[in-house]
Image (cartoon, rainbow, N blue to C red; front, side, top):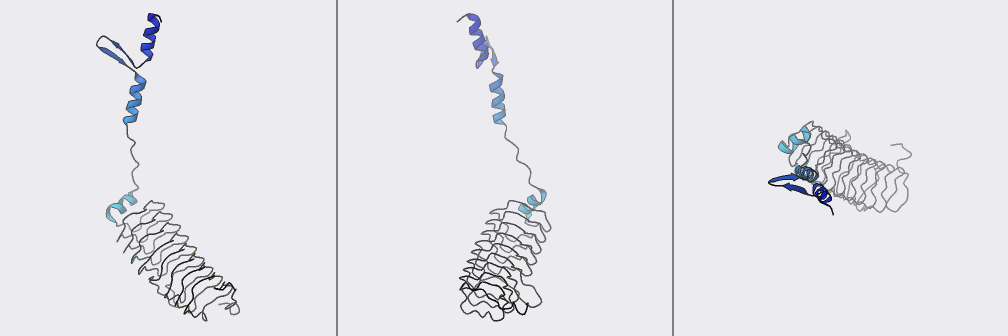
Length: 247
C-alpha cells in the first residue's frame, strides 16, 4: 500500500489525528447525537388531562379516550362524551355518568359499583363480564349492547308503566345472571338470552318479542303476561303469545 492510500484510509475511517488535533468522524457524531434525543410525547387533550387530575369532567369530550384500568372512582362525568372510549377494567365505583354518551365504549370488566348511568347512551357498548352492585340504569339505552356473561343480579331497575326502565332491545345477554330481577315493562325485544339465568324474574308486560330464550333457566318464572311473539323459548319452540293482540 502506498502512503497516499494509507492517508485515504485514515480519512475514511473512525478519525484522523494530526498532532494534538483530532478530526472526528462526523457521521458517527451525528448518529450519536440523534440517539441521545428523546422524542417528546404528545400532550394529552385538555379534557382528558382535567379528568385525570380532578375527576371532575361534566360535559367533557373524551370520545375515543384510552382510560383502560383508570381509577375514576367517584368521578363526575355527567353528560360527558365517551363514545368509543376504552374503559376496560376501569374503576368507576360511585361515578356519576348520568346522560353520558357511551355508545360503542369498551366497559368490559369495569367496576361499576353503585355507579349512576341514568339516561346514559350505551348503544352497542361492550359490557361483558360485568359484576354490578346497585348500578343505576334508569332510562339508559342499552340497545345492541353486549352483556354476555355479566352478573346483573344486583342491578337497580326502576320498572314502571310510565317508563324509567333501560332499553335492552337486541342486547346480548347470553349466559348473563339476571336472577330475581323485576323485568316488568322492560324492552328486551330481539335480545339474546340464551343460557341466561332468569330464575324468579318478574315479567309483567315485559317485551320479549323475537327474543332468544333457548336453554335459559326459568325456574319460578311466570311468563303469562309477557309479550313473547316469535320468541324462541327455553325448549327451542317458537312462541306466538302476544302476536294476536299486537302488544
